[in-house]
Image (tube, rainbow, N blue to C red):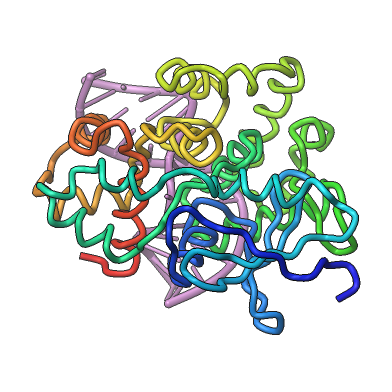
Length: 290
DNA sequence: AGGCAGGTGGCCA
DNA sequence: TGGCCACCTGCC
């Protein structure tokens, strides 16, 4: 394909498996990666970048990027946090005293938390309310096609908040966003009037960042934690969703606990990388429901 | 055919 | 504070 560079190695400090690569890219952290059977690779979009990735061996990915976009390989390394020591992070989790966590860690060796552009993480998770991953992906794709920049022919970035503010609620509803359209429109208008707000939130320590984020229309505790975990590298953020509630109820015998109590439990039990632990538990539970 | 899906905000005791 | 419910849409 003329538009794409040849495959180049991207070394990983933490070993990986093919299944873990799939889970990292398409397991509910991000919504803009698709497997292309014909090319047998993952193709994804973030910010104003697009890339193709395929598993080469446990410590090497192969990467192809659009020709002429020289900054994309470095941006991809940042997005994947390729140089972070995930193995040490895993070892710091309380797996020695938590057999269920231990099982989940072994099931996804090398699983990592992406560093997505913060503004688009907020957008994607605003779409996530009571939706499953495939439907969230459809909503993101429609917003990109209709409102976002075309990065290369046929591949569109998600709209910026500025671009979203320029659309009407009716236009957003027409993209199938449902009741989320109103929240996205209101948040877009608010962010358009404070252009530095998201950058300030991202730069703030987790507790302040979360407190600020939940003031955006449609952003509650869960969406704020997802955006901070997957879009701002705040690994202490511990999203409490229906899956995690189920896990903690059934596998940790915590039935009857309220979401805020479970959130507190998660932070105390899993520690400063609670969100990282959450991702293993989440992935494991979706594949092996209790 | 009706209920439910990686939630949130508003209203009521 | 704590519980309940509407809210879009599509898929089982």
